[in-house]
Length: 64
Image (tube, rainbow, N blue to C red):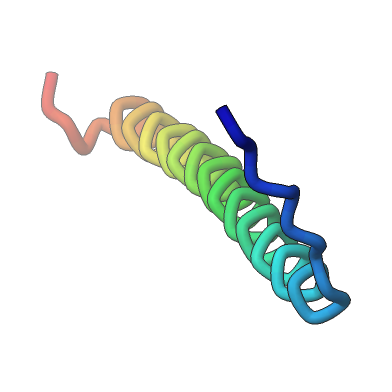
């Protein structure tokens, strides 16, 4: 059973692989940053909503 000799990568091949890997890594980082920002935004929005409800209750705007 004969095996084929391993293909030698050229500089262009290596550059292409490195570029694709860098793009993929950057995409993953951007997804994680987006998730983090979204979580913080909704947390702050919840705090503002709770504060507004507390203020409205204290001011008598919600009824008795």
